[in-house]
Length: 383
Image (cartoon, rainbow, N blue to C red; front, side):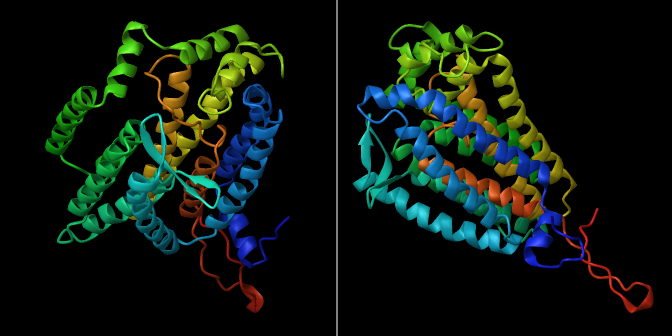
C-alpha cells in the first residue's frame, strides 16, 4: 500500500488515479477472459484449431493491453496530445496503405498484415482523432481567431473519406456520432445542430443507395428476410439462457454462431450466465460513460473536458451498437464489445483509449504547504 508521504511517481499515480474507472476497466478485462473460455472453443474446433486457441490468445492480448493502459495513464495532458498526434499521423498513413495493400475480407479492405500480425488502423485512429479534435475545439474556444473548429471539420472529412473508401460504415457512424457530441460540448449554435442533423440524414440515405451491403443489412433488419442466421441465433441464445443462464460450458446455441467469440460474445454471456449477467455487463459500460461525462463536466480545462467526454462517448457508442445487434435492435454490424470481444487490435486500441481517460481524469496534486515545526505536507490530491 502506498503512503501519502511517498512522493514517487507510482505513489502520486495511486493517490490521483480515478479508482472507480480503474476497477471498471479491470472488471471488463476479466470478463473478457472468462467469456472467451465460454464462447471460443466451439469456433476453434469448427476451424480445426485447439479448443482454447482463441481463449489463450485473449489472455495474451489482455496482458499487453493492461500494460499499455497503465503506462498511458501516467502521461500528462501534454504527453497525451503528443501521443495522439503521432498516432493520428501514423494511422492516416496506414489507412491509405490499407486501400492498396490491405487484406480484403467480404469486399472490404480494413486490415493490414505486418510481420504475421493483423492490424486494423481504424481502431487506433479513433482515440487519436478524438483527442486531436478536443484540442482543436479547445484552442478555438481559448483563442477564437484560431480556426480550430474549421480544422476539426476538415480532419473529420479526411477520416470519413478514408473510412468510406474501405468501406466501413460502422466506424463511420461511430466517428460522426462522437464528433457531433464533442462539437455540441464545445458550444455549437442551434444552426449548426440543425445543419449537421440534416447532413446526417442525407448521409444515411446516400449510404443506403450507394453501398449494397448497407442496404442489404437494413432491408434484412426491417423485413426479416435473407441471411439473418447469425443474428437470429444470437437472439435465440439470449432467450435460451433465461435469467440465470444454463451454466458455464452448457450453452448449445452458441455452437452454431460463427462469430460467438467476437461480435456475439454478449449473446454467449446471456445463454450461459443469464440475462442478469448481461445487465451487469451493460451497467458497467453505462457506469463508465456516465462517470466519464460527470468527470468531464467538473473539469475546468476545455481540452480535458472535451477529450474525456469524446473518449467515453466513442466507448459507449461502440458497446451500445454491439449489444443492440445481439438483441436484434439494430441492423447487423461487425462491432466488437470493448475489452470483452476477441481481437488484438481492438484490445490494444481500447486500452490506449481508456489509458488516456485515466490520465486525463487524474486529480491534480496540490503544491506542498508548510506545516508547523518546519515540516512540509506531502503532495495530496486536490478534492
